[in-house]
Length: 223
Image (cartoon, rainbow, N blue to C red; front, side, top):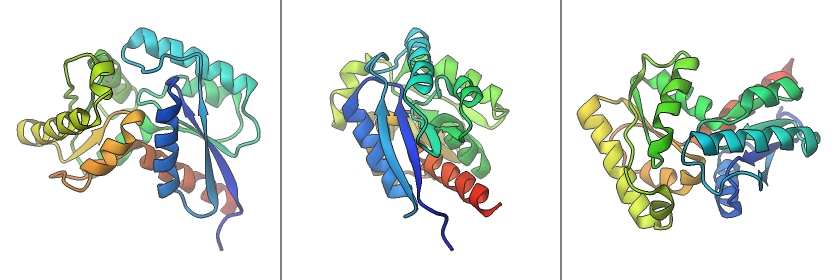
């Protein structure tokens, strides 16, 4: 028997509502029938998190939102790759909280050595530190990234797709990656398209987080 209906709030720590809509659409495709997903955009965040200063601003916005606007949902998904504010939210709320960064890294590490393809070079060092905190640094072989202005690149979906495809193939060829993550919630559409042609398993962060949340909620219902 399926669990009873459950509501999960997908929180976009970037301020772009269009990105929230794309991530919610990707989450709903991955969700079981009993789990509904609703989006939440943190308006006080940067439109796109591109560096550590922006990540700190996003974290403050997410934590403030948790104390002000959350409460009716059965779970929270933090949907920016460095999972800003996730520990503070967990300390504040009684429902499960998962992040697309941690979920995707654990999924990739279960396959083998992995890489994280990024379009935000200013976050590469932060992502490496996050993998270390999760105990996965020994599995992470590379964090290849584009080098230009992320805002300019993200305005051109075709360029984003081509750039990420190149990063994925370089990670496999040059670093021996056995799985590759597309590192970014707003990259959900590109990740879904690249999954069909990737030479190794390609991990889509938003669906990975939905699967982890579904497992947690089903287990809680069962006990």
